Length: 200
Image (cartoon, rainbow, N blue to C red):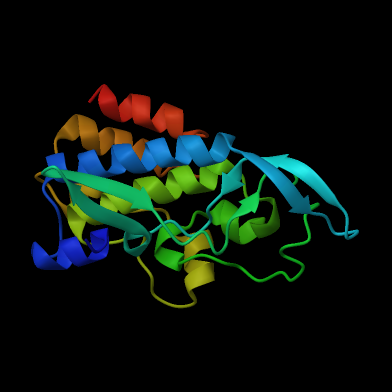
């Protein structure tokens, strides 16, 4: 039971590589499913409803990855879809009428700060990479010093080997690629990030 955050605390602040990879591959499978799910009713700004396709979570972080032990196997599921919205109608649906920025600063890319209402699946893929980085190092990818949202816009992620030199080099390269966010997020789908991790 519990979540990834709890597990990290129990294991001294970070997770072994095999365990972290096993968790994140299941998380990516969950994202592949939700990013392609049919949504029967999405409320539009004009008050009408329309079918939508695909949910973007927008607040993926270790405390939202729930764990259970099924037949001795660690099973991970994404929880807390409180900020989720249909992305194919992004900007049209009436869910986020304010300019508020949802999400947890350590786990969101600059795109989510700049265009929160238009968040696409790539923001969840970046957050998945940030979760893996956190599981392996105990740190979030970016240094935070002042206003968190300015830090997101101004500070690039720190290469993962600078935080934990014991991570296999090929895995470190894939994680660093997944955290590239300028001019756009490197892996724009959970499938692409998953394939890259499997090849490590």
